[in-house]
Image 1 (tube, rainbow, N blue to C red):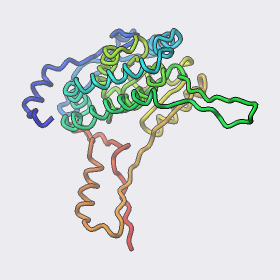
Image 2: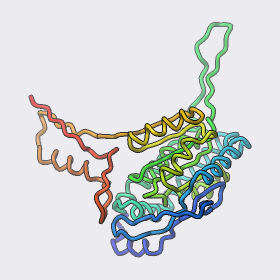
Image 3: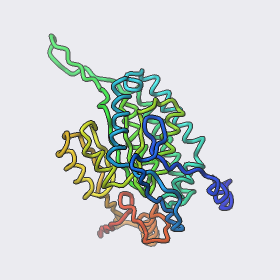
Image 4: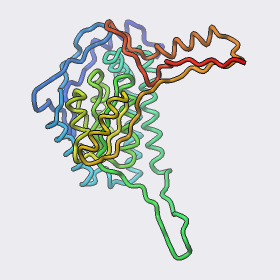
Length: 321
């Protein structure tokens, strides 16, 4: 993206369209309650948009749409070749809309737009491409048994997957949850972080453009204590995938026990280490990289810095001879 100057990025940012509605069953809709929350540009403190603040009723509608699409089979029962084609088309669309998606990431959560354009968006496209290509390359198994027995191991979609993702890599985190779930034939209800909903909402639009049927990918922006909790406690969600703090991860385990004992897949509490060994020849370079590691992707903000725990190299360990 070196051909774009700072002035070019500013010009594109001023013309960008921000999605401020939920995306349920292939349509953009306001929250049933009419409530909204302010999405703030952390670099300026200005309100970018008032975004639909989904609650229990909206989550119910999204889960019902996901369940209906799954049971009807518009995605779950299609051929692996078709699912592959759609996900590869989505990967291409992400690349074609790279500048827009990079600006959404930068405006919404404060990362450098050049980082979003060279790391985040290309990475998201590559992940959708990888899982798309994997669809027709991962085979089922014949289990080792006696001569008179035949045991088959068959991989089937689970059903409705709930996904709750953090603010630090909004598009990438949404992709990490959605791409494997969709590749397997599941339907998804995605709740982005309230600090960074825009790229997830745009992802849903691009997925529809790529050929994903209505209801297969739904996005419910909202607060954790409302939309997140409703998704975690929903009786018709088969699995909940979450990236975020350890304390909230524990809450999702509790929500599972309070509802249908859904599977809960957690990524929590990252504290990445710097390892400096005795034969390190350049301690100054090691110190520079440690500083880079802790502050990379911190979000440039007029407010207190948002620390990015899962990739922040926040521990240091030295080995002496």
